[in-house]
Length: 180
Image (cartoon, rainbow, N blue to C red; front, side, top):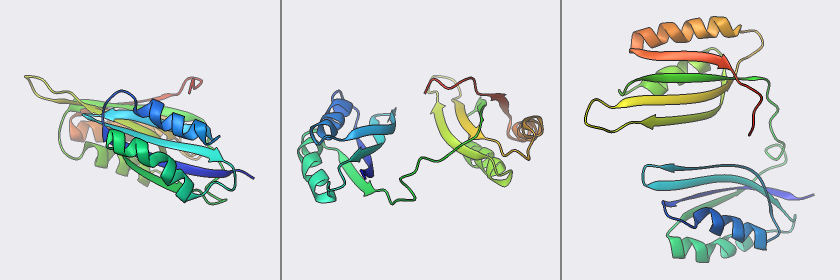
């Protein structure tokens, strides 16, 4: 059975990070299975699950990543996934939640706390704050799995009430067939 790993990579955004990481894994005969890669302001981050030969050790992977980490000044962290972690999670139909409003502290906490209390699982979350001459705006997009016992219309009603209290606009809609 193949071993499954997760690698996180963080460093100053520049060309070549994705190519370098994928090259290291390719040369070791590893298969990329799932990933999230994004720029956060001036930093670039990768979270990537991959599989490799069962005999692939952490030391082998660390040695393979070391030259790239030095050259691009990256922080690399590896974790071997246990058998229970190595099984992709099943998930049901997803919904998208959009949040938009004036930037202020507590938006992510209040929305995620309301979702956690309703047993709604967040499977993906992206935020962005605009910076300009006027007031900053905050946008958040969440992909969530709504538990079967909770009607999406009821969840949307709760989120809209929260939005009124926070002075933000919140909407919920079913996800279209996922491209990714």
